[in-house]
Picture (cartoon, rainbow, N blue to C red):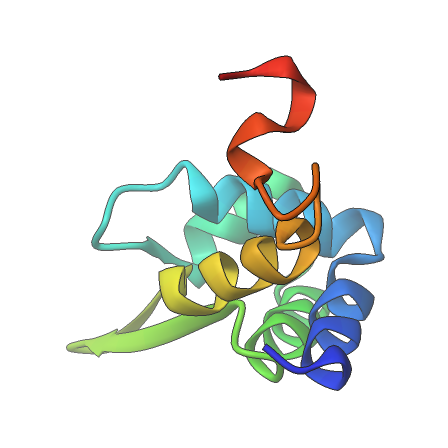
Amino acid sequence: MESSAAIDALGALAHPTRLALFRLLATAPDAGLAAGDIAEKLAVAPSTLSHHLAALERPGLIRHRRDQRRLLYSVAPPTVSALIAFLTDQCCGGRPDLCGGRP
């Protein structure tokens, strides 16, 4: 992942609602969650939620798919993995597996 992409992803997460949204989707089933369910769980107005969903989709942190009339949202594992790798690739002398004292 390039630095600019990491900055975009981190910038998208740098908001309380978007961070809560991302964390909710990270625990969701593989099928994802419908926008209405997300709005209810986070107590966010649907119009506000649309803005936050778009902000997380732009850098590729989440994705959506259509299920008949509903849009289901889920995290995008390749982008999340790339961001984590970008953040930790220089950790502990190039051995991120050793970070935090874990063998």
